[in-house]
Image 1 (tube, helix red, strand yellow):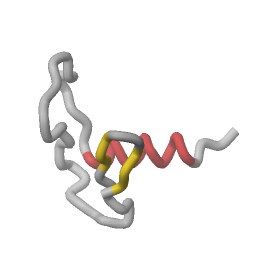
Image 2 (image 1 turned 135 degrees about the vertical axis):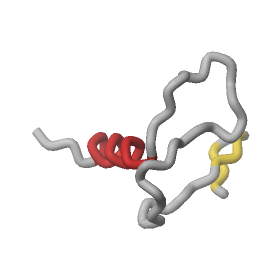
Image 3 (image 1 turned 90 degrees about the vertical axis):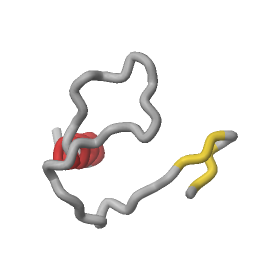
Length: 55
């Protein structure tokens, strides 16, 4: 667990492999959350693309 200001934040190492088809949902739902959640693969690909964007 890492501390960022007043809020607690949990980190998961990206080398931790999981089921790429698993649906990622928040632990505590918030009003207005999207109806369609992303898969593990979509989340990791999005983070990878935003970090290592070329061009």
